[in-house]
Image (cartoon, rainbow, N blue to C red):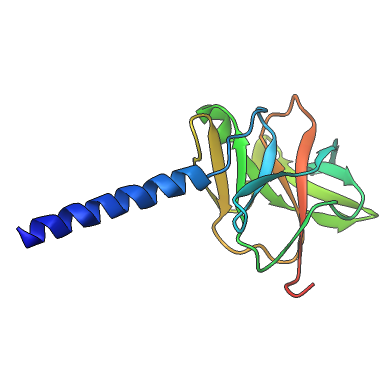
Amino acid sequence: MFIQKWAVLIALSFGTCAAQTATNKPPEPELIGVFFYLDSATQTLKPLPREEYKTHSGGFTTITQEVKLDGTASSFHISSNDKVAFVFRASEESAEKAKLYRCSINGGRREVVLGKLHRADFKPNPGLPVDITKFGESSYKIVPQAPLDPGEYALWTGVTQTPVMFTLGVSPSGR
């Protein structure tokens, strides 16, 4: 009898903890295809800057398709110590196409190579390795598989009809 009471008490404790966790979760994003930074300390969603880009293709034997973003830095920065996760609303098909890229800085702007065409063989840039999981009923969470080094990054839905990327910078810890 004593063990049964303990089992019931433990089961109720887990149920209470699970309910508290669910209520601490931030609401899902309302807009489709807009990325948010999930602040793990406050459990709030912070919108990432939305930046229009220009595409550029160039090369002679190999054609490189790349995106150019104005400026050398995003207006949104986090520390390299921060736990990194992003949330966005999308269909399941679209969520699988989302990418996280590291930007290179060239000539006063940020650049992302989307892929290279050599003869008839196009090799897309797969982006950084990420885990994409369900966050809510119609939203998803992207978590990089490795910590992000200091630098500039861009998130993309993979939809080319909308020339927009969402950007952030990662600053060294202690800055």
